[in-house]
Image (cartoon, rainbow, N blue to C red; front, side, top):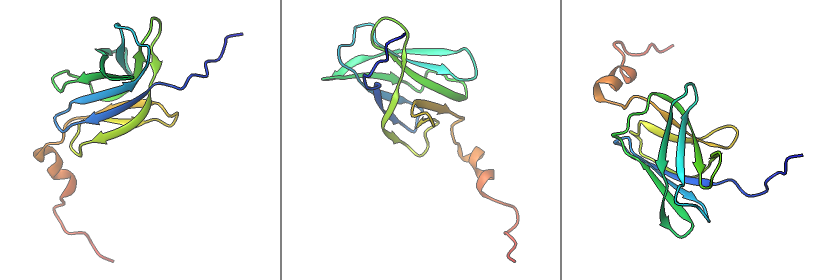
Length: 138
């Protein structure tokens, strides 16, 4: 029988800025120098690995700059703080700019994922909120 771990899941606080950058602050103790945050595309085989560096006591930070391209879709977040397979992250506090194109969120299972979508632009969004004719009132 496989022993069940009763350790709480690693939790990540996230900041999503308007330029498309993401910052992850993972609460982890006893992490090695080889710690990484891993994003896996849910519908494909793509994976992005970001180094986790010490930020404050008991916290590791990874930054995903807007210059790193991520295809649209949902990306599941993992942390590898020791040797072996990465473990799913639980979401912590999230600060998301209203124009963010990469949005962290809590899944139904309580895990952290990121939705990547095309950035909002004035020309793209204009047709979504305006109509050619006024609405009919009944």
